[in-house]
Length: 394
Ligand SMILES: CC(C)(COP(=O)(O)OP(=O)(O)OC[C@H]1O[C@@H](n2cnc3c(N)ncnc32)[C@H](O)[C@@H]1OP(=O)(O)O)[C@@H](O)C(=O)NCCC(=O)NCCS
Image (cartoon, rainbow, N blue to C red; front, side):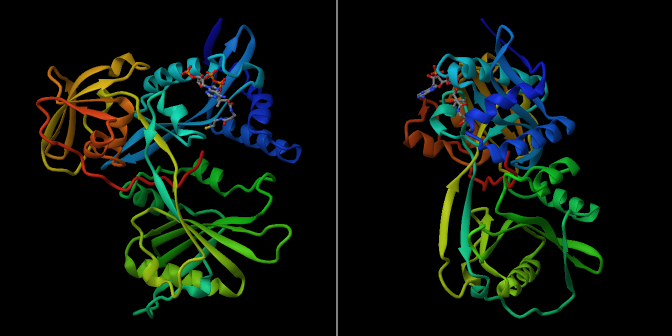
């Protein structure tokens, strides 16, 4: 008989994680260190036991993430795994159903995860959410207009200072679906462990003007053991305006004597081709995270900068009975109002609705693919798309 609870001892997850993620012996020390640090920083682990034996587990991350025009509590699911000899026996199914209640109780409005397989999580109500573009180019192939003034200063820091952190959080509360970062989030991003064997350094470059931070670039410097060539990966280009972006690109171009490849991981709406003298060596788009509404009720009050509208949705959510049923969803003076409704205009699963509310998809797209059903009273009401993008991985 399975029982779900917070792990009796967090370290119980280690043998399961080592086999589930096939961690090599040289990587196993890193996961132990990483786990201790995560626990020290207040991360919690939950799992399913059969008697005293742990069958499956996951780590719950509590983030504050931008959703439309608000910043809301988001439950991030990571390290999800089960024992090799427990596979296919329903431990993870039981765990995810209970995890929804855990996150709801903790006040999370939505949950986000990086799926190993989308259809696996779609069954439990998560749906597609974010994409990023990856560009690889030689720094020498950057072409940037001359600077009108040279008052911007770039400072390479192994760890962001208070100013940079404050700049980042302000930027994150106004852009994409970025999460807020405190010391523990920055530490998680900047620490280099043995399992990242190609990584030489991580850090940020702060761009400032008259002592004021106006831009932040986050990077990772790496080199494969068998190669002389090094790579500079940019995971965040947070610029307060175009002239700061230009200065960031000039900075990257100046690395050309050392760095052979520049890899840029960016949201889809950043167009850098006008700054390239040649096509990039690689340019790809990667589907990343999935999202799930945890509580329809908790969406009430979300700030959403769109014209007034209203639509009634019959929500199908077999795993979370509290969301099941008809909800009257409206936008009134830039605020999302959600309350129990009576007659629905449209019917869809919680995953489809999550994808629409998050800005990744629209009812029009989902209706065309028969992922949602238009009822008689539906008059084409919809939520326009945004550019969901999350730079933190967990
Ligand atoms: C993916 C994983 C978590 C599934 O664990 P599990 O213990 O087999 O899960 P369950 O027995 O609870 O099954 C959950 C669902 O997956 C289905 N499933 C499990 N293994 C499957 C397989 N090999 N092929 C197809 N479906 C499978 C089950 O049928 C069940 O579906 P249902 O709810 O419709 O009945 C486990 O295989 C694992 O730990 N993998 C390695 C680590 C990993 O990739 N984690 C995910 C990180 S995002």
